Image (tube, rainbow, N blue to C red):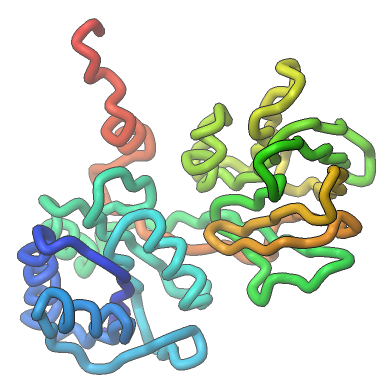
Length: 293
């Protein structure tokens, strides 16, 4: 069996856990392909060179015979792994080296148990919906898909923008705001949540439309089925607005129309036994930890 290991930066304090991780793979005869920049970081910054069998740097040299992808870090690293690898047939599992992470199933205290369950086949595969975003009147993103969200934002710190939103060709609203987020169920616990959007379970077949600092307080987040097509046209005092897909962003002209729909494929993630989405919410958001409860 061969696995891929993706990462970016980790703290020195996590190094003993990472050594446990690689030792388990080596002792169980698992072949390892590692993201080359991560390997270089470990060697240069942490003076650690794991025993691996091969390297990859992008989706172009990513090997086809990989069984699983391990993303070591937080949710940002998980998103980066999805963007770098772009192979939607291979499940990704997050190994959390940070603090708050909704996409990382294996915590630092669970490395051995989590890996043991994984290689015994004790897991389920959870498919996550993606957004496909097209820019009409501007150059599309080189990879125009997002796991979390698509956002339009004003480009300056003064005036708001007006976002004309249509759903399936029918005008829904013209929203005066700093911006607007269209999120997947996965993205409902990311940027959308931070500006007051609702939380969706990962298997919900919906989009969340969340305004950012709307001028009219009656404008609230809306949940719509994910088979709807959403279209956005922006007006403002400037000449451009900012659009982003997860961590990637670009300035585009006001003449650009943005179309958002569900992608024709899904991302596979692994879910280990003994964990549930609601447990994750409770742990990450410290529900019930208030002494007054």
